[in-house]
Length: 333
Image (cartoon, rainbow, N blue to C red; front, side):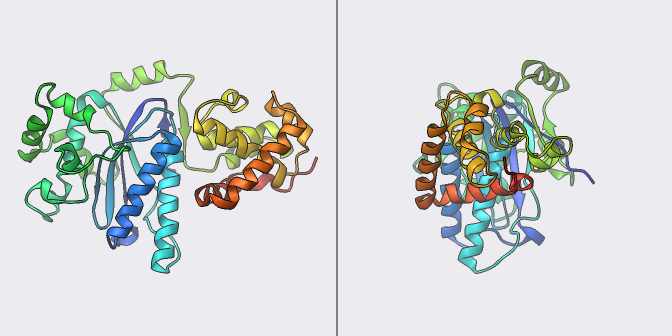
């Protein structure tokens, strides 16, 4: 069975969940949970992904994410991939941790954001782990009530202000602790196969029209496999498109140094991999990228090498990228 396509566009909202393989625990202790929080902070800093609600259960997690930069797939590969690596290292195990790729529902925020935060915060109550959601330490509910410090990667105000502009915390607490879950929400999460989106047909049509040139469709297959089917392996522009697709940026943006982390790291990784893995000449890389000289390519490659020696997250990202561009790794020009 082919996997459903993932729609990405600037400003998209998603309800995301993943579960342990064979329903096994993915969090054994507080160290694991803190590691997961550190990675939520990391995808916020690196990719601009905002977490608006979360709940960490023993064998699964729920997240409500907002992606200003159309990069849910890139961020989730980083989150689940690095968490699995570090969990395995800590537990001295090998192999997959999750039962598969994460589930993500594209969400129409205005009618459903408030309902989804309540569903997420009531997860421990539904699982009979506690009688009141505020008694559970591993959801964002306490931060919503200002009982604990709100981390800089957690955004509570959007949902709170939908509840009330004058006394948002009071009314949000009453809203959640009535323990009523919207019927539409219940139907969605009771199904074995989740829908691709939660919202009206009119909303989906508007998204398609409004973001026609920005929408990226990711089927979780490395971009190189699909792109290489009809392209010659020595086409540097195909290589560049692989990198752009991986990072969720446009090819045009990739050719220009910008302020966004995704654009700059994608551009620098492109140059580093083109030299180190694919054997492209500096001059050819400079011509393809534009606004760059052969010596500029050498400087960027050297700077990336220095960063890779000390940045473990960047090392993991490089290893993953090598898998994406593997079909081109023997290119010589």
